[in-house]
Length: 639
Image 1: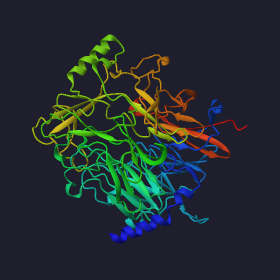
Image 2: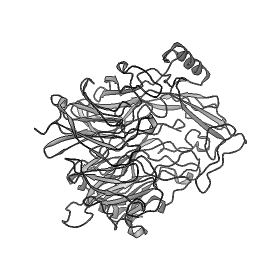
Image 3: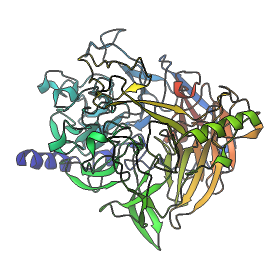
Image 4: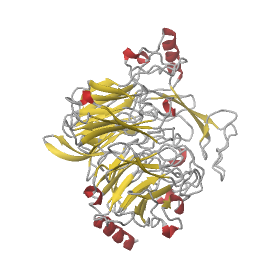
């Protein structure tokens, strides 16, 4: 083990600057490796944004669930599709240069014979050698994870499979998380993409977190050339590996290349809504974790929810940024949460920038459960969403609608934030969809602001006792789990309960929580105070029949990008628009129609002397919007 750590350190050291020296201005999902979702270009600014026009549109033909943010590197745009393909585009005209397809069907390369499935893919990653050798293949590589738990290496110039990657494991062209122990049952997949630090490509696995003995949330570092395992990190205590699982990373990653750190936003341990079998400490569950990217060793961690039974997964990477705070510059990790608070932590130590208070929270009344008596609450920054509900807050499209919401509110258990799931039914607010969620935060260094989106929709949770009186069976070898035909709900294998979750909406399909249901907020990182909040998006579908001018905000998937031009760009809403806002005020200064709703994070780059803003417009089944396949680029007129 000692030799592995030393050699992995040397591998990382020798290539530490490769990502920084690569010809790349948006090399990861979040732009720079720190994931701030910030573009340093200002050709498009408050004075010129009104002249933006569509420069080109590319369609892959894979019409489904497009949540991707392309990356810009090697004078190319690279993105993944929901059908497990990777596409390379000319960044100036959107013309396709090559297409990678690992499957054996539909003209693919035949690397794998698994069934092609429609699944979200949020990003790919890029690496190139410090001094690429001309004419040598795979000196520039694109990495992509998939639903099968595979991580592919692709030649950035040609789209060919890099056959030296994974060759030692018997499958040239990719490595597999299934080649290593998972310590539990259920899938291992990647939807949010890897990240490269030096000569190590870091890949996390998403798992099914309902079974008690779910697969553990391993994160692994692989050598970028050979695919050899350099290190692996398991968030589950080694002596407890079959008593719980998960605590995985399903969302995006960020890195501090200069310090050689990679940052993990982890989820709740399993089972997610009932923690009776896991009352022991699991400090890496629902936590921000900084790992040494060369060795996988924990440098620091901060747990944002203790004994998480609320499904308050950390939904996005921490933003690694230099803020102005207290009269000085501070390097920090800014972690958004589903429950509406930001944790601002020192990037080297994990120490909070502002004090964090321990506050009492409601106790569980479910037999066998033992919830944490307190939870940590940051004193600052101020919450970026509504965090408490009262009966008088409840909304209805009509008086009868509102009366129904109030009656339902009276039937449910609700004692404020962190009210745990219950047998009688619990109102959970903010709901397990957020608050904050993936891609939802950006940092602007010029105004020293975090720009963050939020949902304001509650959820209802029930724990349903197993009618057989015993534990819900563990999954079958094929992954199937017997359902609860008597009481309804979803199984939590290994527990005595099933679970049922639903949005807190009226019979008309309108949220019972008060509008706006989607917001965008700016928070000053010096004072910790909210500078502005606006409703975001407009809705005239799915039972919500408000006139467009009422502007109550919509369900939001995706998030913002900030630019040196003083602008915030965001799609993310249900109304098929991309908008530009004034960073100082939140005022809308430009908008354009998209072919489909743009439920992703935009990005920006320079090519041929022009600044481009690119938005993936493909709708999303979770918001019941039409699905498509458009990558849309905007730029100023060429003259």
